[in-house]
Length: 237
Length: 112
Image (cartoon, rainbow over the protein chains, first blue to last red):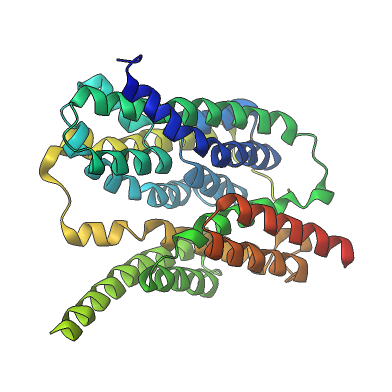
Protein backbone atom coordinates (compact mmCIF):
# COMPACT_ATOMS: atom_id res chain seq x y z
CA UNK A 1 0.00 0.00 0.00
CA UNK A 2 2.81 2.38 0.93
CA UNK A 3 4.51 2.12 -2.46
CA UNK A 4 1.34 2.90 -4.41
CA UNK A 5 1.13 5.93 -6.72
CA UNK A 6 -1.67 7.33 -4.54
CA UNK A 7 0.68 7.45 -1.57
CA UNK A 8 3.28 9.40 -3.53
CA UNK A 9 0.63 11.74 -4.91
CA UNK A 10 -0.33 12.47 -1.31
CA UNK A 11 3.31 13.08 -0.45
CA UNK A 12 3.64 15.54 -3.34
CA UNK A 13 0.45 17.38 -2.40
CA UNK A 14 1.41 17.50 1.28
CA UNK A 15 4.99 18.66 0.79
CA UNK A 16 4.26 22.40 0.28
CA UNK A 17 2.59 22.48 3.71
CA UNK A 18 6.00 21.94 5.32
CA UNK A 19 6.51 25.67 4.66
CA UNK A 20 3.76 26.34 7.20
CA UNK A 21 4.48 23.42 9.53
CA UNK A 22 8.19 24.17 9.99
CA UNK A 23 7.93 27.73 11.39
CA UNK A 24 4.76 26.91 13.35
CA UNK A 25 6.36 23.90 15.06
CA UNK A 26 9.63 25.78 15.67
CA UNK A 27 7.66 28.58 17.26
CA UNK A 28 5.75 26.19 19.49
CA UNK A 29 9.01 24.63 20.67
CA UNK A 30 10.48 28.05 21.40
CA UNK A 31 7.41 29.58 23.06
CA UNK A 32 6.64 26.53 25.20
CA UNK A 33 10.26 26.28 26.37
CA UNK A 34 10.40 30.01 27.14
CA UNK A 35 7.19 29.63 29.14
CA UNK A 36 8.91 27.10 31.37
CA UNK A 37 8.09 23.62 29.99
CA UNK A 38 10.93 21.09 29.78
CA UNK A 39 11.80 19.31 26.54
CA UNK A 40 9.88 16.14 27.44
CA UNK A 41 6.72 18.16 28.12
CA UNK A 42 7.10 20.20 24.94
CA UNK A 43 7.50 17.00 22.92
CA UNK A 44 4.65 15.40 24.84
CA UNK A 45 2.37 18.15 23.55
CA UNK A 46 3.51 17.81 19.95
CA UNK A 47 3.45 14.01 19.91
CA UNK A 48 0.23 13.35 21.84
CA UNK A 49 -1.91 16.35 20.91
CA UNK A 50 -0.55 17.34 17.45
CA UNK A 51 -2.79 20.37 17.15
CA UNK A 52 -0.82 23.60 16.97
CA UNK A 53 -3.50 26.11 17.90
CA UNK A 54 -4.69 24.04 20.87
CA UNK A 55 -1.12 23.51 22.07
CA UNK A 56 -0.43 27.25 21.97
CA UNK A 57 -3.73 27.87 23.76
CA UNK A 58 -2.84 25.42 26.54
CA UNK A 59 0.65 26.88 27.01
CA UNK A 60 -0.67 30.43 27.12
CA UNK A 61 -3.36 29.54 29.67
CA UNK A 62 -0.84 27.62 31.77
CA UNK A 63 1.33 30.77 31.87
CA UNK A 64 -1.76 32.72 32.94
CA UNK A 65 -2.10 30.29 35.84
CA UNK A 66 -5.55 29.24 34.73
CA UNK A 67 -6.98 26.19 36.54
CA UNK A 68 -6.53 22.81 34.85
CA UNK A 69 -10.21 22.47 33.92
CA UNK A 70 -10.26 25.85 32.18
CA UNK A 71 -7.02 25.09 30.29
CA UNK A 72 -8.55 21.84 29.06
CA UNK A 73 -11.91 23.36 28.11
CA UNK A 74 -10.33 26.19 26.11
CA UNK A 75 -7.85 23.95 24.29
CA UNK A 76 -10.45 21.28 23.53
CA UNK A 77 -12.86 23.95 22.29
CA UNK A 78 -10.23 25.00 19.76
CA UNK A 79 -10.11 21.38 18.55
CA UNK A 80 -13.87 20.84 18.32
CA UNK A 81 -13.71 21.77 14.65
CA UNK A 82 -11.99 18.43 14.07
CA UNK A 83 -15.25 16.60 14.74
CA UNK A 84 -16.42 18.28 11.54
CA UNK A 85 -13.33 16.95 9.69
CA UNK A 86 -13.93 13.48 11.08
CA UNK A 87 -17.53 13.56 9.87
CA UNK A 88 -16.49 14.81 6.44
CA UNK A 89 -13.93 12.02 5.87
CA UNK A 90 -16.09 9.19 7.19
CA UNK A 91 -17.99 8.56 3.90
CA UNK A 92 -14.60 8.00 2.22
CA UNK A 93 -12.46 6.37 4.92
CA UNK A 94 -15.07 4.97 7.33
CA UNK A 95 -14.71 1.44 5.89
CA UNK A 96 -10.97 1.29 6.57
CA UNK A 97 -9.66 -1.24 9.15
CA UNK A 98 -9.78 -0.07 12.76
CA UNK A 99 -5.99 0.41 13.08
CA UNK A 100 -6.01 2.58 9.96
CA UNK A 101 -8.94 4.67 11.21
CA UNK A 102 -7.13 5.13 14.52
CA UNK A 103 -4.02 6.34 12.74
CA UNK A 104 -6.06 8.55 10.38
CA UNK A 105 -7.76 10.15 13.39
CA UNK A 106 -4.47 10.65 15.23
CA UNK A 107 -2.98 12.70 12.35
CA UNK A 108 -6.20 14.50 11.38
CA UNK A 109 -5.00 18.12 11.24
CA UNK A 110 -6.15 21.13 9.22
CA UNK A 111 -3.69 20.42 6.41
CA UNK A 112 -4.28 16.69 5.95
CA UNK A 113 -8.03 17.22 6.18
CA UNK A 114 -8.03 20.00 3.58
CA UNK A 115 -6.01 17.93 1.09
CA UNK A 116 -7.97 14.72 1.58
CA UNK A 117 -11.38 16.42 1.45
CA UNK A 118 -10.49 18.13 -1.82
CA UNK A 119 -9.07 14.94 -3.35
CA UNK A 120 -12.00 12.71 -2.34
CA UNK A 121 -14.50 15.27 -3.58
CA UNK A 122 -12.93 15.36 -7.05
CA UNK A 123 -12.19 11.59 -7.13
CA UNK A 124 -15.05 10.03 -5.15
CA UNK A 125 -14.99 6.67 -6.94
CA UNK A 126 -11.41 5.67 -6.19
CA UNK A 127 -11.00 2.36 -4.32
CA UNK A 128 -10.68 2.54 -0.55
CA UNK A 129 -7.02 1.45 -0.62
CA UNK A 130 -6.07 4.36 -2.86
CA UNK A 131 -7.87 6.84 -0.63
CA UNK A 132 -6.14 5.51 2.48
CA UNK A 133 -2.76 5.60 0.73
CA UNK A 134 -3.33 9.15 -0.44
CA UNK A 135 -4.27 10.27 3.05
CA UNK A 136 -1.19 8.70 4.63
CA UNK A 137 0.89 10.28 1.87
CA UNK A 138 -0.27 13.74 2.92
CA UNK A 139 0.71 12.93 6.52
CA UNK A 140 4.16 11.62 5.57
CA UNK A 141 5.72 15.07 5.50
CA UNK A 142 3.43 16.94 7.91
CA UNK A 143 3.85 14.70 10.98
CA UNK A 144 7.67 14.13 10.98
CA UNK A 145 8.33 17.83 10.41
CA UNK A 146 5.95 18.72 13.22
CA UNK A 147 7.87 16.56 15.74
CA UNK A 148 11.38 17.41 14.51
CA UNK A 149 10.87 21.16 14.34
CA UNK A 150 9.20 21.27 17.75
CA UNK A 151 12.29 19.57 19.15
CA UNK A 152 14.61 22.00 17.37
CA UNK A 153 12.55 24.94 18.68
CA UNK A 154 12.69 23.57 22.23
CA UNK A 155 16.47 23.19 21.97
CA UNK A 156 17.15 26.72 20.64
CA UNK A 157 14.39 28.31 22.74
CA UNK A 158 16.44 28.18 25.90
CA UNK A 159 19.10 30.48 24.44
CA UNK A 160 16.98 33.35 23.08
CA UNK A 161 17.38 36.64 25.03
CA UNK A 162 14.32 38.79 25.99
CA UNK A 163 15.30 41.62 23.57
CA UNK A 164 13.74 39.52 20.82
CA UNK A 165 10.29 40.25 22.26
CA UNK A 166 9.25 36.62 21.92
CA UNK A 167 6.36 37.33 24.27
CA UNK A 168 4.69 38.65 21.14
CA UNK A 169 5.42 35.65 18.91
CA UNK A 170 2.32 33.94 20.25
CA UNK A 171 -0.21 36.75 19.62
CA UNK A 172 1.24 37.34 16.14
CA UNK A 173 0.97 33.65 15.27
CA UNK A 174 -2.62 33.51 16.47
CA UNK A 175 -3.57 36.64 14.53
CA UNK A 176 -1.96 35.17 11.42
CA UNK A 177 -3.90 31.98 12.02
CA UNK A 178 -7.25 33.72 12.50
CA UNK A 179 -7.02 36.44 9.82
CA UNK A 180 -7.35 34.10 6.80
CA UNK A 181 -10.29 32.40 8.56
CA UNK A 182 -12.34 35.62 8.55
CA UNK A 183 -13.95 34.62 5.27
CA UNK A 184 -17.57 35.57 5.87
CA UNK A 185 -19.52 38.21 7.85
CA UNK A 186 -20.45 35.40 10.26
CA UNK A 187 -16.78 34.64 10.97
CA UNK A 188 -16.05 38.34 11.46
CA UNK A 189 -19.00 38.74 13.83
CA UNK A 190 -17.91 35.70 15.86
CA UNK A 191 -14.35 37.04 16.15
CA UNK A 192 -15.61 40.48 17.19
CA UNK A 193 -17.83 39.03 19.94
CA UNK A 194 -14.94 36.87 21.11
CA UNK A 195 -12.61 39.88 21.43
CA UNK A 196 -15.19 42.19 23.03
CA UNK A 197 -16.39 39.50 25.42
CA UNK A 198 -12.91 38.42 26.50
CA UNK A 199 -11.84 42.01 27.16
CA UNK A 200 -15.04 42.96 28.99
CA UNK A 201 -14.94 39.81 31.15
CA UNK A 202 -11.17 39.75 31.72
CA UNK A 203 -11.61 40.58 35.40
CA UNK A 204 -13.47 37.33 36.06
CA UNK A 205 -11.39 34.74 37.93
CA UNK A 206 -9.91 31.55 36.45
CA UNK A 207 -10.06 32.85 32.84
CA UNK A 208 -13.75 31.96 32.81
CA UNK A 209 -14.39 35.15 30.84
CA UNK A 210 -12.74 33.59 27.79
CA UNK A 211 -14.99 30.53 27.93
CA UNK A 212 -18.14 32.68 28.19
CA UNK A 213 -16.93 34.93 25.37
CA UNK A 214 -16.14 31.89 23.19
CA UNK A 215 -19.57 30.37 23.73
CA UNK A 216 -21.24 33.68 22.90
CA UNK A 217 -19.03 34.07 19.83
CA UNK A 218 -19.88 30.59 18.56
CA UNK A 219 -23.60 31.27 18.93
CA UNK A 220 -23.13 34.63 17.18
CA UNK A 221 -21.39 33.00 14.20
CA UNK A 222 -24.10 30.38 13.86
CA UNK A 223 -26.92 32.93 14.18
CA UNK A 224 -25.41 35.40 11.70
CA UNK A 225 -24.94 32.57 9.21
CA UNK A 226 -28.55 31.53 9.59
CA UNK A 227 -29.77 35.10 9.33
CA UNK A 228 -27.73 35.76 6.17
CA UNK A 229 -29.02 32.55 4.61
CA UNK A 230 -32.62 33.50 5.27
CA UNK A 231 -32.08 36.99 3.94
CA UNK A 232 -30.51 35.64 0.74
CA UNK A 233 -33.36 33.17 0.31
CA UNK A 234 -35.88 35.96 0.84
CA UNK A 235 -34.27 38.37 -1.68
CA UNK A 236 -34.24 35.63 -4.30
CA UNK A 237 -38.02 35.21 -4.17
CA UNK B 1 8.90 35.35 28.29
CA UNK B 2 7.86 37.02 31.49
CA UNK B 3 4.95 34.93 32.76
CA UNK B 4 6.30 31.55 33.79
CA UNK B 5 4.45 28.32 34.09
CA UNK B 6 4.34 27.44 37.77
CA UNK B 7 2.27 24.25 37.68
CA UNK B 8 4.01 21.09 38.83
CA UNK B 9 5.26 18.37 36.46
CA UNK B 10 2.40 15.96 37.24
CA UNK B 11 -0.16 18.74 36.69
CA UNK B 12 1.32 19.57 33.31
CA UNK B 13 1.47 15.92 32.27
CA UNK B 14 -2.15 15.48 33.33
CA UNK B 15 -3.12 18.32 31.02
CA UNK B 16 -1.04 16.88 28.16
CA UNK B 17 -2.57 13.42 28.63
CA UNK B 18 -6.20 14.56 28.87
CA UNK B 19 -5.75 16.97 25.99
CA UNK B 20 -4.16 14.18 23.91
CA UNK B 21 -6.93 11.69 24.64
CA UNK B 22 -9.69 14.30 24.28
CA UNK B 23 -8.35 15.55 20.97
CA UNK B 24 -8.01 12.00 19.67
CA UNK B 25 -11.61 11.23 20.64
CA UNK B 26 -12.81 14.36 18.82
CA UNK B 27 -10.90 13.24 15.71
CA UNK B 28 -11.96 9.61 16.04
CA UNK B 29 -15.60 10.50 16.76
CA UNK B 30 -17.13 9.92 13.36
CA UNK B 31 -14.40 7.78 11.80
CA UNK B 32 -14.45 5.32 14.65
CA UNK B 33 -17.54 5.67 16.77
CA UNK B 34 -20.52 7.34 15.18
CA UNK B 35 -20.01 6.14 11.63
CA UNK B 36 -21.85 7.43 8.61
CA UNK B 37 -24.74 9.13 10.34
CA UNK B 38 -23.12 12.53 9.86
CA UNK B 39 -23.70 15.74 11.73
CA UNK B 40 -26.96 17.70 11.86
CA UNK B 41 -26.83 21.10 10.15
CA UNK B 42 -27.14 23.05 13.41
CA UNK B 43 -24.11 21.27 14.91
CA UNK B 44 -22.02 21.98 11.83
CA UNK B 45 -23.07 25.61 12.08
CA UNK B 46 -21.62 25.85 15.60
CA UNK B 47 -18.48 23.82 14.92
CA UNK B 48 -17.55 26.01 11.97
CA UNK B 49 -16.97 28.93 14.34
CA UNK B 50 -15.00 27.26 17.14
CA UNK B 51 -11.51 28.55 16.14
CA UNK B 52 -12.65 32.13 15.48
CA UNK B 53 -14.64 32.06 18.71
CA UNK B 54 -11.75 31.04 20.99
CA UNK B 55 -8.53 32.38 19.49
CA UNK B 56 -9.38 36.10 19.09
CA UNK B 57 -10.56 36.29 22.70
CA UNK B 58 -7.40 34.57 23.85
CA UNK B 59 -5.09 37.01 22.09
CA UNK B 60 -6.99 40.28 22.59
CA UNK B 61 -5.71 40.88 26.16
CA UNK B 62 -2.16 39.93 25.11
CA UNK B 63 -2.25 42.51 22.32
CA UNK B 64 -3.86 45.27 24.37
CA UNK B 65 -2.16 44.69 27.72
CA UNK B 66 1.16 42.91 27.03
CA UNK B 67 2.97 41.34 30.00
CA UNK B 68 6.33 42.57 28.70
CA UNK B 69 5.34 46.21 29.33
CA UNK B 70 3.67 45.47 32.64
CA UNK B 71 0.22 45.59 31.04
CA UNK B 72 0.52 49.06 29.49
CA UNK B 73 -0.62 49.28 25.85
CA UNK B 74 2.47 49.37 23.62
CA UNK B 75 2.39 51.18 20.24
CA UNK B 76 4.98 48.83 18.68
CA UNK B 77 2.98 45.72 19.58
CA UNK B 78 -0.35 47.26 18.55
CA UNK B 79 1.11 48.25 15.18
CA UNK B 80 2.63 44.79 14.67
CA UNK B 81 -0.73 43.18 15.47
CA UNK B 82 -2.53 45.44 12.98
CA UNK B 83 0.01 44.69 10.23
CA UNK B 84 -0.20 40.93 10.85
CA UNK B 85 -3.98 41.12 10.66
CA UNK B 86 -3.97 43.17 7.44
CA UNK B 87 -1.47 40.89 5.69
CA UNK B 88 -3.32 37.81 6.90
CA UNK B 89 -6.66 39.02 5.57
CA UNK B 90 -5.19 40.17 2.25
CA UNK B 91 -2.80 37.30 1.45
CA UNK B 92 -4.47 34.45 3.41
CA UNK B 93 -0.92 33.37 4.17
CA UNK B 94 0.11 32.48 7.72
CA UNK B 95 3.76 32.77 6.75
CA UNK B 96 3.60 36.23 5.17
CA UNK B 97 1.46 37.53 8.02
CA UNK B 98 3.85 36.36 10.75
CA UNK B 99 6.90 37.60 8.82
CA UNK B 100 5.32 41.02 8.19
CA UNK B 101 4.20 41.34 11.80
CA UNK B 102 7.61 40.36 13.17
CA UNK B 103 9.39 42.79 10.82
CA UNK B 104 7.02 45.58 11.95
CA UNK B 105 7.52 44.74 15.61
CA UNK B 106 11.32 44.75 15.42
CA UNK B 107 11.40 47.94 13.34
CA UNK B 108 9.03 49.71 15.71
CA UNK B 109 10.85 48.52 18.83
CA UNK B 110 14.15 49.67 17.31
CA UNK B 111 12.79 53.12 16.38
CA UNK B 112 10.99 53.84 19.63
